[in-house]
Length: 141
Image (cartoon, one colour):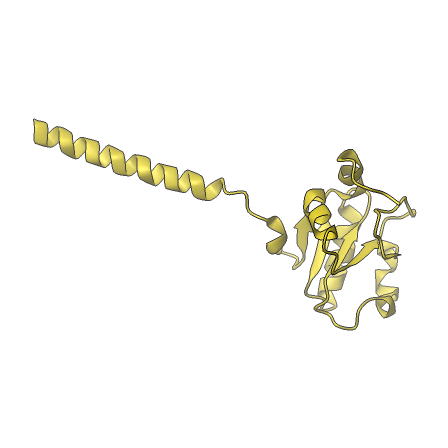
């Protein structure tokens, strides 16, 4: 009986260890900016963009129409529906980092898709736009 109980405790112990490992793997706080979505660009949160602003090495573009108050540090405004007409304003090196934003993230997502289709490989979209940025109290121009 004692031998049978020991085997049961060993099996239960292994199950608990496996469950803890699986839970730990899925609950890791990963940086989503390293993961491209199915369209080939990277969605980032306002907190991630704020961290990136501390060592700004990218072009920050507001694509919202109508033009809105800009995030502090914005480099230019290009209406999302005119992104195709303004490639001359973008870096010729298509591996340069470009971050797009709008009010809610939908217009910048559309513009991000276009940039990826045109060969840009380092495109970021502020997924919740200026709405989240302002809500968190981050700086505006």
